[in-house]
Image (cartoon, rainbow, N blue to C red; front, side):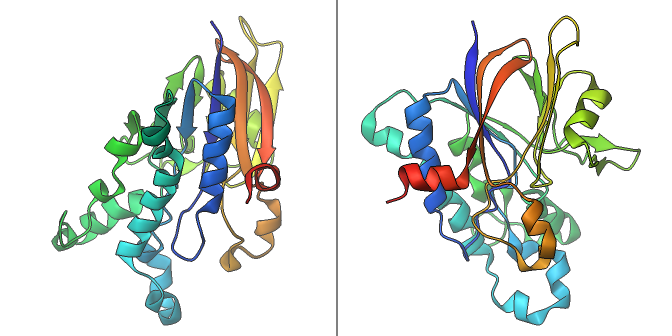
Length: 258
Protein backbone atom coordinates (compact mmCIF):
# COMPACT_ATOMS: atom_id res chain seq x y z
CA UNK A 1 0.00 0.00 0.00
CA UNK A 2 1.43 3.38 -1.00
CA UNK A 3 2.02 6.18 1.50
CA UNK A 4 2.22 9.95 1.67
CA UNK A 5 4.95 11.95 3.41
CA UNK A 6 5.81 15.60 4.00
CA UNK A 7 9.54 16.34 4.17
CA UNK A 8 11.22 19.54 5.29
CA UNK A 9 14.73 20.50 6.30
CA UNK A 10 17.00 23.28 7.54
CA UNK A 11 14.33 25.43 9.18
CA UNK A 12 16.95 27.06 11.45
CA UNK A 13 14.67 28.29 14.21
CA UNK A 14 16.31 31.18 16.03
CA UNK A 15 15.16 34.07 18.21
CA UNK A 16 15.72 36.71 15.52
CA UNK A 17 12.97 35.26 13.27
CA UNK A 18 9.35 34.57 14.12
CA UNK A 19 8.03 31.01 13.81
CA UNK A 20 4.82 31.77 11.94
CA UNK A 21 5.93 29.54 9.07
CA UNK A 22 5.59 26.52 11.37
CA UNK A 23 1.93 27.33 11.93
CA UNK A 24 1.51 27.35 8.14
CA UNK A 25 3.29 24.02 7.87
CA UNK A 26 1.11 22.60 10.63
CA UNK A 27 -1.98 23.67 8.68
CA UNK A 28 -0.61 21.98 5.54
CA UNK A 29 0.03 18.78 7.48
CA UNK A 30 -3.54 18.81 8.77
CA UNK A 31 -4.89 19.29 5.23
CA UNK A 32 -2.70 16.66 3.52
CA UNK A 33 -2.90 14.09 6.34
CA UNK A 34 0.37 12.35 5.47
CA UNK A 35 1.33 8.99 6.93
CA UNK A 36 4.52 10.53 8.26
CA UNK A 37 6.43 13.81 8.44
CA UNK A 38 10.22 13.93 8.21
CA UNK A 39 12.43 16.71 9.55
CA UNK A 40 15.89 16.22 8.02
CA UNK A 41 17.69 18.31 10.63
CA UNK A 42 19.05 21.78 11.36
CA UNK A 43 15.70 22.68 12.86
CA UNK A 44 17.48 24.41 15.73
CA UNK A 45 20.00 26.97 14.52
CA UNK A 46 21.89 27.14 17.85
CA UNK A 47 23.62 30.36 16.83
CA UNK A 48 24.83 30.83 20.40
CA UNK A 49 27.18 27.85 19.89
CA UNK A 50 28.53 29.00 16.53
CA UNK A 51 32.32 28.95 16.86
CA UNK A 52 32.71 31.15 13.78
CA UNK A 53 31.07 34.09 15.55
CA UNK A 54 33.78 34.20 18.22
CA UNK A 55 35.64 36.46 15.80
CA UNK A 56 32.84 39.03 15.82
CA UNK A 57 31.99 40.46 19.28
CA UNK A 58 28.89 42.24 17.96
CA UNK A 59 27.46 38.85 16.95
CA UNK A 60 28.24 37.25 20.31
CA UNK A 61 26.37 39.94 22.25
CA UNK A 62 23.09 39.14 20.46
CA UNK A 63 23.25 35.41 21.20
CA UNK A 64 21.62 33.48 24.01
CA UNK A 65 21.53 29.70 24.45
CA UNK A 66 18.25 29.72 26.35
CA UNK A 67 16.53 31.79 23.68
CA UNK A 68 17.84 29.43 20.98
CA UNK A 69 16.26 26.48 22.77
CA UNK A 70 12.99 28.35 23.33
CA UNK A 71 12.78 29.31 19.66
CA UNK A 72 13.14 25.67 18.58
CA UNK A 73 10.61 24.30 21.05
CA UNK A 74 8.16 27.03 20.12
CA UNK A 75 8.48 26.00 16.47
CA UNK A 76 7.75 22.37 17.33
CA UNK A 77 4.86 23.40 19.55
CA UNK A 78 3.25 25.25 16.64
CA UNK A 79 3.42 22.05 14.59
CA UNK A 80 2.28 19.46 17.05
CA UNK A 81 0.46 20.86 20.09
CA UNK A 82 -2.68 21.34 18.00
CA UNK A 83 -3.27 17.58 18.07
CA UNK A 84 -3.79 17.70 21.84
CA UNK A 85 -6.68 20.08 21.27
CA UNK A 86 -8.31 18.55 18.20
CA UNK A 87 -7.79 14.87 19.15
CA UNK A 88 -7.22 14.16 15.47
CA UNK A 89 -4.87 11.41 14.38
CA UNK A 90 -1.31 12.71 14.30
CA UNK A 91 1.09 11.58 11.56
CA UNK A 92 4.15 9.58 12.54
CA UNK A 93 6.98 12.05 13.24
CA UNK A 94 10.56 11.32 12.18
CA UNK A 95 13.51 13.57 12.96
CA UNK A 96 17.22 13.71 12.17
CA UNK A 97 20.07 15.46 13.94
CA UNK A 98 21.76 18.01 11.70
CA UNK A 99 25.09 19.71 12.11
CA UNK A 100 23.45 22.68 13.86
CA UNK A 101 21.88 20.51 16.57
CA UNK A 102 25.24 18.76 16.79
CA UNK A 103 26.76 22.06 17.96
CA UNK A 104 25.47 21.19 21.44
CA UNK A 105 27.43 17.94 21.53
CA UNK A 106 30.54 19.61 20.11
CA UNK A 107 30.43 22.34 22.75
CA UNK A 108 30.18 19.76 25.54
CA UNK A 109 33.01 17.69 24.05
CA UNK A 110 35.17 20.82 23.92
CA UNK A 111 34.37 21.79 27.52
CA UNK A 112 32.46 19.15 29.58
CA UNK A 113 31.96 21.69 32.37
CA UNK A 114 29.22 23.27 30.25
CA UNK A 115 26.98 20.21 30.43
CA UNK A 116 23.94 20.28 32.67
CA UNK A 117 20.22 19.70 32.20
CA UNK A 118 19.23 22.38 34.71
CA UNK A 119 21.96 25.02 34.65
CA UNK A 120 24.13 24.07 31.69
CA UNK A 121 23.65 22.97 28.09
CA UNK A 122 22.22 19.63 27.07
CA UNK A 123 20.96 17.93 23.92
CA UNK A 124 17.90 16.95 25.96
CA UNK A 125 16.79 20.59 25.96
CA UNK A 126 15.63 20.07 22.35
CA UNK A 127 13.06 17.54 23.65
CA UNK A 128 13.48 15.33 20.61
CA UNK A 129 11.90 12.43 22.52
CA UNK A 130 8.77 14.56 22.88
CA UNK A 131 8.53 16.10 19.42
CA UNK A 132 9.36 12.95 17.41
CA UNK A 133 8.24 9.32 17.39
CA UNK A 134 11.64 8.32 15.99
CA UNK A 135 14.71 10.52 16.14
CA UNK A 136 18.06 9.67 14.58
CA UNK A 137 21.16 11.18 16.15
CA UNK A 138 24.61 11.24 14.57
CA UNK A 139 26.38 7.91 14.05
CA UNK A 140 30.19 7.83 14.04
CA UNK A 141 30.32 11.64 13.97
CA UNK A 142 28.13 11.84 10.87
CA UNK A 143 24.40 12.15 10.14
CA UNK A 144 22.43 8.94 10.33
CA UNK A 145 21.11 7.45 7.09
CA UNK A 146 17.82 5.57 7.50
CA UNK A 147 15.53 3.80 5.03
CA UNK A 148 11.80 4.48 5.01
CA UNK A 149 9.75 2.73 2.32
CA UNK A 150 12.77 2.25 0.07
CA UNK A 151 14.07 5.84 0.39
CA UNK A 152 17.24 6.62 2.31
CA UNK A 153 16.95 9.81 4.38
CA UNK A 154 19.59 11.81 6.20
CA UNK A 155 20.77 15.36 6.81
CA UNK A 156 23.48 14.78 4.23
CA UNK A 157 25.43 11.99 2.56
CA UNK A 158 29.14 11.99 3.25
CA UNK A 159 31.96 11.72 0.75
CA UNK A 160 35.62 10.86 1.29
CA UNK A 161 37.30 9.44 4.37
CA UNK A 162 36.79 12.58 6.43
CA UNK A 163 33.00 12.62 6.10
CA UNK A 164 32.51 15.92 4.29
CA UNK A 165 29.01 16.51 2.93
CA UNK A 166 28.52 15.50 -0.69
CA UNK A 167 27.82 18.65 -2.69
CA UNK A 168 28.02 18.90 -6.48
CA UNK A 169 26.49 20.93 -9.28
CA UNK A 170 24.15 18.01 -10.01
CA UNK A 171 23.57 17.00 -6.42
CA UNK A 172 20.41 14.95 -6.93
CA UNK A 173 22.09 12.92 -9.66
CA UNK A 174 25.20 12.40 -7.51
CA UNK A 175 23.09 10.97 -4.69
CA UNK A 176 21.64 8.27 -6.92
CA UNK A 177 25.07 7.49 -8.38
CA UNK A 178 26.70 7.18 -4.95
CA UNK A 179 24.09 5.10 -3.15
CA UNK A 180 22.30 3.49 -6.13
CA UNK A 181 18.88 3.97 -4.54
CA UNK A 182 16.36 6.68 -3.78
CA UNK A 183 17.89 9.28 -1.46
CA UNK A 184 16.59 12.48 0.16
CA UNK A 185 18.81 14.94 2.04
CA UNK A 186 18.96 18.55 3.17
CA UNK A 187 21.93 20.60 4.42
CA UNK A 188 22.81 22.74 1.38
CA UNK A 189 19.54 24.79 1.41
CA UNK A 190 19.42 24.26 -2.35
CA UNK A 191 16.92 22.23 -4.36
CA UNK A 192 18.12 19.50 -6.67
CA UNK A 193 16.18 16.59 -8.11
CA UNK A 194 17.08 13.67 -10.34
CA UNK A 195 14.76 10.91 -11.53
CA UNK A 196 16.21 7.70 -12.93
CA UNK A 197 13.30 5.89 -14.53
CA UNK A 198 15.32 3.02 -16.00
CA UNK A 199 16.66 1.81 -12.64
CA UNK A 200 15.74 -1.78 -11.81
CA UNK A 201 13.58 -3.12 -10.30
CA UNK A 202 12.06 0.31 -9.50
CA UNK A 203 12.78 3.92 -10.50
CA UNK A 204 14.96 5.88 -8.09
CA UNK A 205 14.97 9.54 -7.05
CA UNK A 206 17.77 11.78 -5.80
CA UNK A 207 16.36 14.77 -3.92
CA UNK A 208 17.95 17.69 -2.09
CA UNK A 209 14.96 19.23 -0.34
CA UNK A 210 15.78 22.95 -0.20
CA UNK A 211 15.22 24.62 3.18
CA UNK A 212 12.51 25.97 5.45
CA UNK A 213 14.37 29.07 6.62
CA UNK A 214 12.46 32.12 7.73
CA UNK A 215 14.87 34.76 6.44
CA UNK A 216 17.93 35.47 4.30
CA UNK A 217 21.33 35.34 5.97
CA UNK A 218 23.78 38.27 5.67
CA UNK A 219 26.75 35.90 5.94
CA UNK A 220 25.62 33.94 2.85
CA UNK A 221 25.72 36.85 0.40
CA UNK A 222 24.64 35.87 -3.11
CA UNK A 223 24.13 32.26 -2.03
CA UNK A 224 20.78 33.36 -0.57
CA UNK A 225 19.44 33.55 -4.14
CA UNK A 226 20.33 29.87 -4.69
CA UNK A 227 18.32 28.64 -1.71
CA UNK A 228 14.81 27.33 -2.31
CA UNK A 229 12.42 27.75 0.61
CA UNK A 230 9.50 25.38 1.04
CA UNK A 231 8.57 21.78 1.76
CA UNK A 232 8.16 18.56 -0.20
CA UNK A 233 5.09 16.36 -0.43
CA UNK A 234 5.72 12.81 -1.59
CA UNK A 235 2.67 10.89 -2.74
CA UNK A 236 2.20 7.27 -3.80
CA UNK A 237 5.41 6.21 -2.05
CA UNK A 238 6.20 2.57 -2.77
CA UNK A 239 9.55 0.76 -3.02
CA UNK A 240 11.48 4.02 -3.28
CA UNK A 241 9.32 5.47 -6.05
CA UNK A 242 6.97 8.43 -5.51
CA UNK A 243 5.28 11.45 -7.05
CA UNK A 244 6.95 14.71 -6.04
CA UNK A 245 5.17 17.96 -5.21
CA UNK A 246 7.01 21.12 -4.16
CA UNK A 247 5.18 23.63 -1.96
CA UNK A 248 7.00 26.95 -1.76
CA UNK A 249 7.13 29.17 1.29
CA UNK A 250 5.19 31.77 -0.67
CA UNK A 251 2.44 29.23 -1.41
CA UNK A 252 2.22 28.41 2.28
CA UNK A 253 2.03 32.12 3.11
CA UNK A 254 -0.77 32.74 0.60
CA UNK A 255 -2.77 29.70 1.69
CA UNK A 256 -2.37 29.82 5.44
CA UNK A 257 -1.00 33.24 6.39
CA UNK A 258 -3.38 35.28 8.50
